[in-house]
Length: 338
Ligand code: NDP
Ligand code: PYC
Image (cartoon, rainbow, N blue to C red; front, side, top):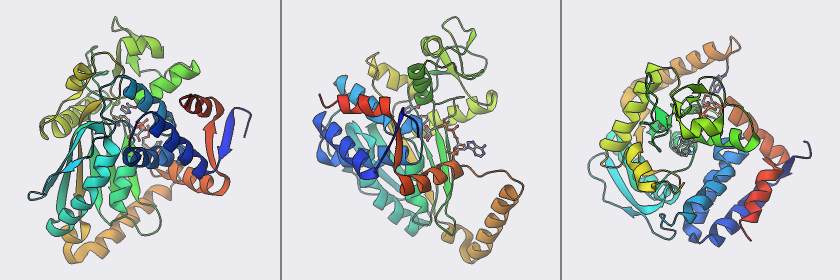
């Protein structure tokens, strides 16, 4: 550990986050739900969506757009669908309110959907997916963001960074989980490059004239690009449709218009789909699970790693030695108390 990095107990980061978020005016219920997610992110060395997000929350609160106290309203589950109105508040509390209903519907029907409307969303998706795999369910989660990302062949933002996360329950402590932005890099990562004065990887974006650029400031003025060319572009379109139009909420352009240049985190809806493998595979689930495990082994046996293995290793390391956080970030978060 060098001078620029601190190692702190999880409880210390938890307390700091609670104090800061409540100092910024959030209710204890919102502060707790948000703290659980950002601390988990930092614990898992998810730098773009860990403690750094406390700064994003603070900036969003300054816009005056977010409701700091609103209790989410869970509407009665209709068929497979549970809908939660977050009422212009941050999403984590609405997620926690809706999740038990999603799990119950999924167990009853074999599959279920949780629709969260009218939320400010700033978190990673893997904590949400892991809440479902912990219940023995498979999960697919997606959300739009702000229209920062140009379609392949274009140069103006249309899509959000539009993450997609998938989880599969496994025997043992860890599920199979992937979680990635459909943009070449996440916006949070672009911001971290800007803070550190670093160039972006090639292919991350274009400047305001549409020319390829690795300058995070120029790309923020121009547009980010999707990963994988037309394939990322199509996946990003799907996220706009499934977690925007389908659930009766804003797409990434609508979110950006709502923000009107104030610099808050995106405001839109959010979609979680859950599947009960016991129901889908019927009596075949034990054999199906064995085949899935054989596939994972065929990946790792050749030296390739599974997604989330880096995070799980960081989680184990954090449990042993404390959570690693940059001193500059810790100081910036603490400064919010003044
Ligand atoms: P990364 O590119 O860092 O990682 C994507 C996934 O690929 C992870 O599951 C990662 O696992 C895995 N992975 C990375 N390298 C390998 C490898 N060599 N072999 C196998 N798997 C690998 O993610 P992004 O930067 O795109 O996204 C970061 C976070 O930002 C996500 O959690 C996402 O939810 C969040 N986000 C949230 C948004 C929102 O609107 N709320 C918008 C955009 C992003 P591992 O973590 O173990 O490295
Ligand atoms: O990193 O792209 C991102 C992001 C958008 C909203 C929250 N995170």
